[in-house]
Image (cartoon, rainbow, N blue to C red; front, top):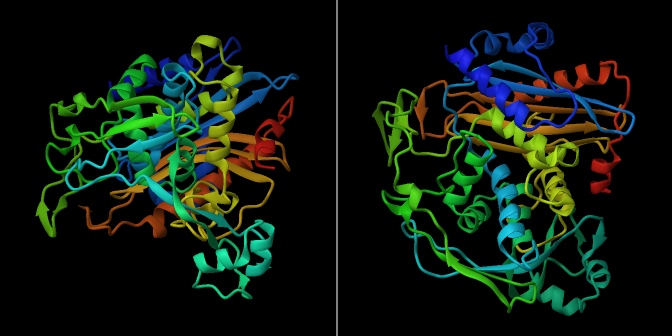
Length: 466
């Protein structure tokens, strides 16, 4: 009965993202048999997929001569009903809904709008910082003096701001050099960069306030999604989720007020599940391990298939019927695709240096495993990834300009050998990321070898990263 319910749900959501062309909904056992054959070192994970709460979705794209969508062919494997903690996966709908809300409700609002949060405490002893110094990331080998000259800044001034560096030193790549003595307000673009490129939780929390919990729930309902985002990514004491700071959005002149309000989060007083949703056998309470699983009944809860389809909606935006599209325009679409696909080293101007030296694959688990390797120029993963409480998830649209291949892959896996939630002893590096890396490689290899009547033109996406 549960399986039949999921297939009906999957079919409904698939149709909801469709266009006038044919869309294939396929569950092909042969596809997964071939994938498993190519991953013998992970046979235990596939065999005991319920223990690992494993779920995988793949979408193949067939194009026509005009580069339109001829057909989408989807494959699904694994556990679709058990709970998994989404962690930073919620940043995908957050980024989309933020731009939808700006476009629909804020006249003259844009990603260049400035945001300011009041200094009142909320959610316990938390409050948001508003001002940050300006930094520039070094992307080429050069001396400190040459850097100052290239930035058209007085050398003595830059040396003073970065006294820890010698004026004649050779700057290491990805070093962040402070450019300003004063501090700047954050723009919405700053928040999106920090949230999507670096997976910064503080940036998400600020975006969460602007969107509001009620807007999240409304948009999911309108799309007939069961997902929900009802919490910030920070600890709040009991009752703390109902408190929200006031915020102000101003025009790009940082003076003209566009809106001044308080986030609407009244729904957080609700309990969303009538029964406990327990994960693990024991869990941490303060510094103690107590018996029983952790209850996630009132936490963020998303369905992997819905996040997979949401990424499809974003990437294939212009190919969908008007009433099936996200409520964004081409500019917003390109902005989000670029940020979801940017490597950390490609962001050169920023208001924090907290993310110095992060590797290309920091947030790329499918295909790259979050390793230190540099991603080749022909490959690009437009993705969102998250990991917490033993759950690792990645939703990705991967392109290979060399072989003219494209594929959507989403996967989640749970690794928690001691079954304790909250002790930070999870097998991310030993099992989860190596599994996702090999899975991405196998799925992409299959796509590269798949015969197609028409090869896709990928420059509309690849060109965003030139």
